[in-house]
Length: 331
Image (cartoon, rainbow, N blue to C red; front, side, top):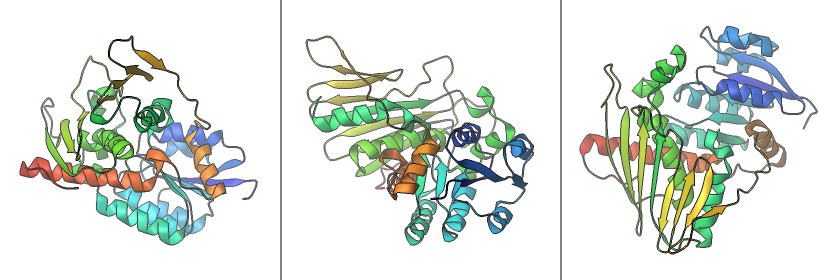
């Protein structure tokens, strides 16, 4: 790979983009060549890039990239990835991959045809507990796991002060894939898929319970049924003045794993809870990790793997269908 890594950014309306641009600034040899966005957010980013465009299609037609950060709405991100992959450009896509499984499959097909790296970034992917819990489950530390519960969210994008352009598509069911179910249910879906594989069936209840404005759902409860276990997921934009962190609990036949503010604890009968020492991540910068995958020709691991992220889209598709029918649905 060339000493200079030519980086482009397609879309600025995903609120996570600013932290990811900062991550790219820390990649040795990375040059922020161009950025594209059609909103006034472009003015906020222009100084960091050599060039700016109002159209990502025009940018891809005029620039050569070694890597592309894709941070648009969940529908447009699919279109960007498909076109970029045709040009042989590796893509780092901010969660949740796509608005639905059909679009996720289009992205996977484009990646397979191009042979280039496709990585889905989840902010929680850079927390050691994600992998420490997986290691504990797989080692049998709590016996056979039979239930996981995972709750994630906050009081809502508007309520926490997200900019109008991020809010604009998060509240659009078509562009987002749902409301809170797509925003925060996706975290639980990808974690369940990573830990336990695909469920046999999915049941979901969702609705707008607290907002006095139109939104398809501000709270979703999703139940995943496996042959020998169950998973309970909550995605919420309706929780105020409560623990907003992602703290999964996994119950096993002989004990329980629980995450408290990033600290994994193992609970076994008759003994004091044991704090599991966090395993340091070899790489904690998503852009650096992505470029290592590109350089080495390796597939991103864990929830960053696009196959696993696509399966999370299948779980959410089934959940949304279940919420409409009132019946469990196979993903």
